[in-house]
Image (cartoon, rainbow, N blue to C red; front, side, top):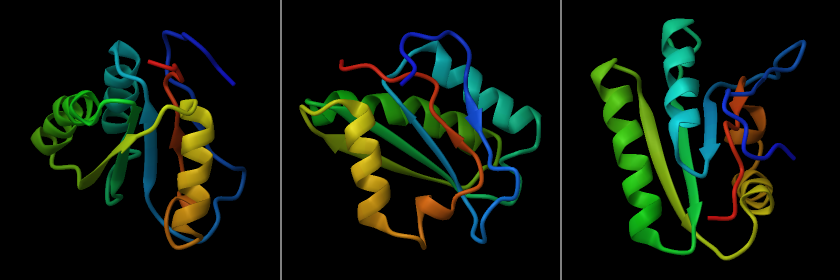
Length: 121
């Protein structure tokens, strides 16, 4: 697990699986902005849907974190969905649970998976 990094980490398999989409999961902060800027500037988000996931024990905080990044993607005409998830578990375990719960037709077949930071806040 990566903690408190200031640069985004983009994980892309050597041969992407069938499917589409990009998952961006985070705890908030400038790392997310950098990751989304990189996705847009490098053209990785072109013709893909970006799923933004925020994990926090307070739904309002998770929603607020997603809102500002959703606005950035909207300004750049990038299709996206938001998932504010309320949990006291670690973000890493929640992300893995959500990927498993949603199944192959969703994030498990996504091309890039971006996890700019994983915090417990």
